[in-house]
Image (cartoon, rainbow, N blue to C red; front, side, top):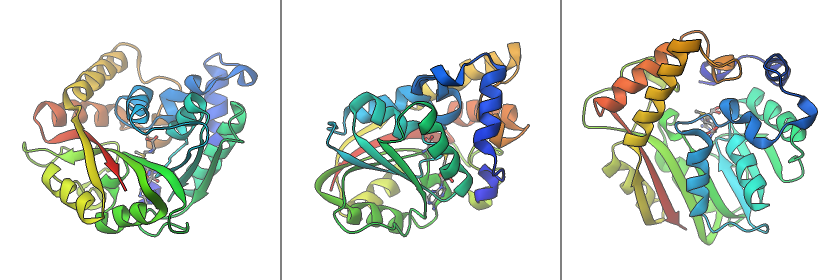
Length: 269
Ligand SMILES: C[S@@+](CC[C@H](N)C(=O)[O-])C[C@H]1O[C@@H](n2cnc3c(N)ncnc32)[C@H](O)[C@@H]1O
């Protein structure tokens, strides 16, 4: 699964080079400058900020980001709320790059990244005040383990914010998609199954929001941009490969035909 996302150990150097070529000064970067590459989910930074609004964050909140990727969502929270975010991801190369990228924007004191598995979290019980996971569960078959581990490491009353791609009623997704080139590493649940997983893990669901329409518009705009001027120099394509434009086109179909949905859940531990 890691090889789907990245098999490059020099990822931060590669991203730095792309940023320089696109005219950015690495000494003047802000967290927002990195969002075309490090907010690796549908609707990018805006979706992270929407989720964060409901997480009751203050500068004293200690947050866990499960499946933190290149660290964009973690930096967005740390930058916007002053909280501390620990990111955990299965892909070592992403953790290494995330740490370096936090240094570029002076957020290395408020973010930390470590390699690990969402289904076996390397943290003590009741450790974090809040947790989030964005576009990760679609690669994880053992969702019961993933959500019960999240519940275990959260303090009672802590908020767990989930934003994920779910199975829609329109049939199987058309592949490749950004999380999988073929079905064997794709594990989508329906909204009913998702609610059951979260409840059985011990969470109370406070809010559910379906953003499939906004996601469709977001991919349509991206397709139009790619058709006009090619993929952006600093984008997910840096680590997803040359079939990225095909993935984006498929996502427009998948959303239009309701094969997938994007849904967020705000839960209380
Ligand atoms: C689409 S990316 C999303 C990254 C990040 N949440 C974001 O929104 O920018 C999915 C991430 O999930 C990670 N992942 C997949 N399975 C995982 C697991 N079992 N434990 C931890 N991370 C996992 C991948 O390595 C990848 O970084």
